Amino acid sequence: MALDDYSRKRDFARTPEPPAGPELIGGKRFVVQRHNARRLHYDLRLEIGGTLKSWAVPKGPTLDPKEKRLAVHVEDHPIEYSSFEGTIPEGNYGAGTMTIWDSGTFEVLGEPNAEQQLARGDFKFQLHGSKLMGNYALFKIKSSKKNEWLLLKKPDFAAQPGWDAEDHLEPVSSRTSDLQLIPGAKSAKMPERVAQVFMLREIEDLSVEETARTLGLMPATVKTRHLRARRRLQEALAPELKAAITGAFPFLGADCQRMTERVMAALEAQGFGA
Image 1: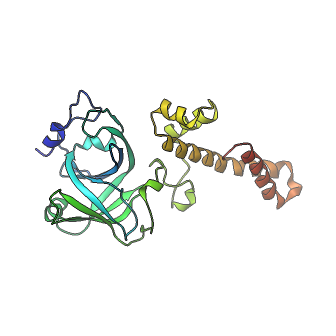
Image 2: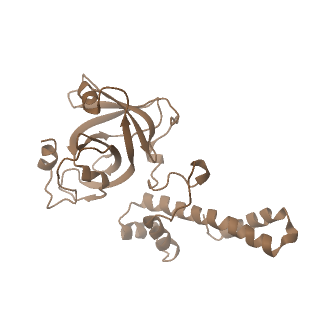
Image 3: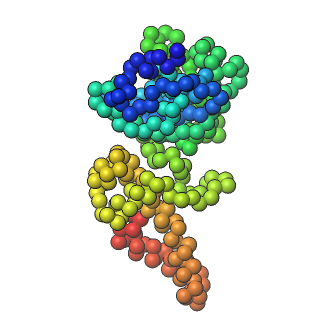
């Protein structure tokens, strides 16, 4: 069975990872998990043939077509693993903290199907994620004895020179703080974990480290989410503030914008949005 290796390597009484369930057919989801284990790496998983075909990518995926990323093909994982986040305790296979870095759907490019492309060692696909987009290819290194592949980004609309995964640790729930950059985007409720970070930092006045321990997050994640929450609050407050100034001081005319900027600058000087 495709998931035998996965089950054999784990004691599910000692790890929070999901046990292998029935193989499910039909989906085309992908997930990239940031795995802070003995050595930090990223796990790329693609739903193919009822399981998650998986590759460990030491330097993480990229949007830079000039970069070639080593990708070690590892055991298949169950579909349920696509939503797994948590800490695998010491003494277990893959011990360390795992978070979802990106997720979405994918489609196979060209012929034949995914299983046949993988079997020949040349798999082309397109990702539709929050961070990873566009065309990619996985090529098996024929001279390798360790099931090593290369993950390549193809030159296309999503290509970005110098793009590195470690520079993009923000949650996958929002791709950018500037909604105008996303066609058809609408304002949405702040994600629960982002709101929790903001509350603990702003209201409870906890440090980054204390907030991280309370929510079970990494300090770097707390910093990123806190900055995003403040930025969103600024963006929501600025137009309301300008409207209030315009209503109270209509004689200012075009100077209303300048007054708004001065008030926002004063708030920032007191720590708001910094």
